[in-house]
Length: 567
Image 1 (spheres, rainbow, N blue to C red):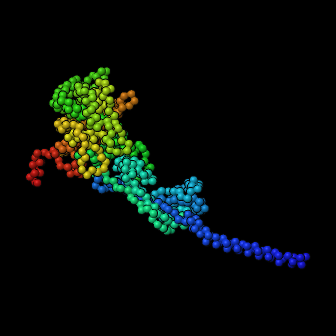
Image 2 (image 1 turned 90 degrees about the vertical axis):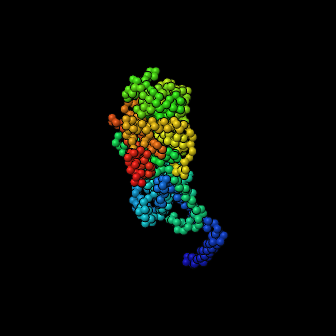
Image 3 (image 1 turned 45 degrees about the horizontal axis):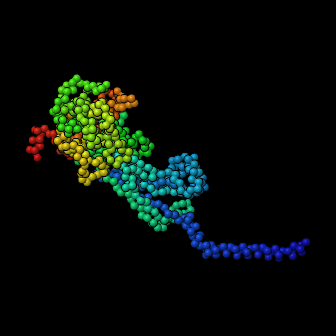
């Protein structure tokens, strides 16, 4: 037996040796194949795994007020991302990662599962610097930081409705951020980098495209006036427990929006506050019936017709006026008055009688030319069109109520623009949210003689005994009109829900600013525009005259003499 095994041993040895020889030759050939024949292929495979083209974020353009004060800026931040296959293997390190970024371990597990088949998944965007440092210190395979930009709004809720906000990807969603999104957006750059086995960038290879930052945007807003208007509007809404409020200030000469505020507001830096009822810009999106603030335009059409003059008598006796089955009333019997007093006392009866004596199409045309019930074409996203009824379908009662601001609808911005036209000698100018180097021409809608007469009448409104007496600004002449409007509801008008309004110009001798104050549903017994909205106008304009250094036009003669002597 032993001899037989001894005889087979050399054969088996030769077989084993042959197998090893063949294997060695095969390995040698494979090495030659990999290193020589397939070298380019392997290099491509390696680069495909470690050489990447990544996007370099571009800086979004800054938004500033007219004086260069920042309203929206982009700041560099880090975001945490991960490679699901690699993080799946690092099971023991997941709790530490979840704790560092402030999420639950279960949430992290779901994100890993959702990322199947992908190499890049965001875990948390825009983390604080200390969180970024903690994540980096953990050194977990497949977890990395991405450089991005986050939008920051220094003025917070004060300018929120004008400026708007961006989404998590830095794209404009509301306000001027949306309207000028293409202008503000930058063009991202690209570069080729080498990543290690953990997905970290270890070397920049080459720049393929340099990032191009977005263009800056200079607004017409004066942040000083914006703060002032916001403060006073907020105080008034709170004092009267009102549902909401809006305030718009226009530069009469240029049509620029110097301030636009709303209540309630929101802080765009706190994304939990981004809810539609908070971020809606009511001054351009919400329609309302303007009430008695429209009477100057009714009187303007009457003056232009040549049938009426400021001293033309109007009989408002006995304080009410029947039109068909409807009765139009004043708060008291003013008796026989002139056209100027119709405005000063805000007589619905007087305004209705004047309107009914005019051709309906002429009345409609006068309102339409003043931009009432039509969009200002400001370019602000979501701006409402407004409504002006068809003159060919007017009934008598509709023509009568149109005279004192019922039956048409407009926005706060549209009403401010119409009043600004009274301050330019009858020229209706375009509205702009962007800074204007020089005044832009508009179209003439009123004669200068009509405008001059209307301004004199509107000054009487703010004088002693007028409905707008509380809009008085010391040392300045003010022209304006109050309005108190019942809110429309299904089937008619509510008895105890009002909109309180004041629209005015200052200084009346040579108007520089036009402003409209709207308080929606003030609660309690005080709800008239002259009691609620007019004082807001006064407080804002006292500050505005000082901030803009506008010279007084109503100094007492003795004080004026003293100023001249000391000058």
